[in-house]
Length: 380
Image (cartoon, rainbow, N blue to C red):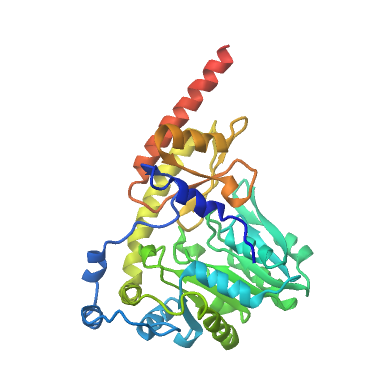
């Protein structure tokens, strides 16, 4: 299988070492090792102190899977397979899909969610998120017109990265009803579930409410993405077992230190989530003020959840040129639309880091230079 270049990750690989500032990080503020260990209960302290660096259980660490179940309402430890989040997407897609299958994918989203089905020979239909006067939305009528009994899989990313979109419950129910009537499986990358900006906008995990659901979660929003720990969840015993067997050909088992650190984190999930959500909401307020102040250059589209937003640079300016200028002149890394296969002049803003205001101040200098150059051009 030949997969197209993962442009989003290659962008970070190319510029991350050079960049002094980053405006587009999707991960939340990272925890230090000491912060995590200070949260450990006596059992986890003992596990850490006596940790063996031998092989771990392929299906995962039982205490961690038990801790993960607290984030769901009807999921058992046996419904969970531990793995690296991106690995989970790769394994699931390879198990579920065959050449010629039809897949509908909401877009924009993590590129692997549509590039992997494409590489497997599937017919991929992109279901576009649209900008409206009240924010991002999915046209459910588009899904109703395109989903058929031939549709093997519907791929969602809710809360969405990069837009921060979350459907209201009635919209989600309609989406799942359409999938159910056509016998379609639904896969949701739901890393940011629990980070709704308005608690009233919270929706349950699809694994809890749809019998053909498979979901991916991970430690990104808890501040431990460097552990590379995540989980695949489904009530389908067959899917969990088949994905576990496929994992024998990838990582086989998880890293032992990561499992204990992840267990500590998930036993303190509410506190970690509150910590990073507070950072996101503070940065969101700063971002809103900045983009509204510069509404002559940008269209700010309000996110509903997660740790990212996806504003648009207004014509005649080109977002790719802006991103290149930021990197070349200010060592500021900005992820533009091309990383998501788009041509709409949007770019990603990451709201989860404590240094966001500093990166935004550097970006403000770029904006001032753009505005000055525009004024000079008009005078000529």
